Image (cartoon, rainbow, N blue to C red):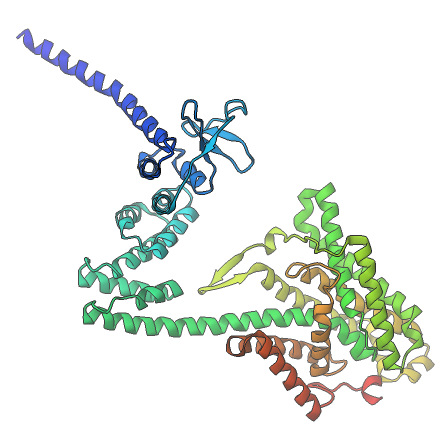
Length: 537
């Protein structure tokens, strides 16, 4: 009877020793894993990557990512491992604690080769699948799908069993399907189900996988894959058409923004303003100045920079436009050739002035947070900046219509256009209506520059890229017609984007130019003929 308590006590001692030794053994194993990174031998580095990925160490993902970017280093004196941050700060890989510069002196980077990179890619997939961030898990699943690494299937199955996010679960399911569909070891029913899952995804990655079924695969699998691939191609063709339509509307909105001010100065007043592109440029540089001031004095207001820039750009470009009209244009009415040459000289002078003040290199204009990035709509990737420009263009067009139709200034401007002598006889100061109309068109061009600064390089030559297209839009739509300008800009934008996949960008533009020339031969006043001083002359 006395032996039983002694036996139980012995068991307790053994368990206690085991429990005490387990953390020590785990620590020793982790130390050995980290030490392998410092042997400067590629097989040891690959083995260390595999072990750290399975270890559950809180620094595991950061260590492997640092190795990928060349930011993992070791100290030759004691072979301790360090992670070097993007800012140059050094932390111990074992604990994640920051290390003083004196401790991190003389570090050597851990080297990698192609086999190690393959091991790293597999380890990153496993680690990111276990990340707390759903976005990281989704990216990991998509990366595994593209890599087609069959060894990742167990990790995907385990991740799918514990996944609670529906979008991530869908990505993992599709990644599993991508691995199973090309794996001859899988049962036929599993591969057929994988084909159906890829067909439901309907992406280009899925199409590539469906087309990669080997020729020696069973006939049922090949036939199902062919039908699924044909369905995916039809789906992608429809999506491509919708995407080109959106891109065409986006391009049309850019053309409308650039041309809508010219529709007033050229269409309403009959002035061939070759400096119109420079009004756009001034608006873009106004945006740059506003952002520089906010960066220096009120960084928290940067996301509101465009709201500050819009009225300032309108005032700057509009004021310059009024100054040009009062000092040059007013003496050249009815003399189109002299007006063209004079405004061309003004455009060169404005470009040189901007080069003198800001330099000839491109200037950085940042995107506010709400215009940054893209979003997915029914499988189509759309950028926020383009979408907001479309919305902004509609707002500017509506503003112009309101000014022309429902304000006293708009009434006087239409009166001068339709019958200048009669308007002057009833007391309208036609010379100032001319000046403010030219200023309005120039101010709208400045607002266009604010929007274009978000999608184009801000440089002294910014306006030159839009002046020819602007004239084409105004002439095609009908001189002096805002609605014609709208229809022409959107039509040319959509036609351009629909022709690009077929004929290429250059041939597409040439075809559109030839079409406009032929159209003007048959209908010289454009789509919407405008009555008034310009049409009657």
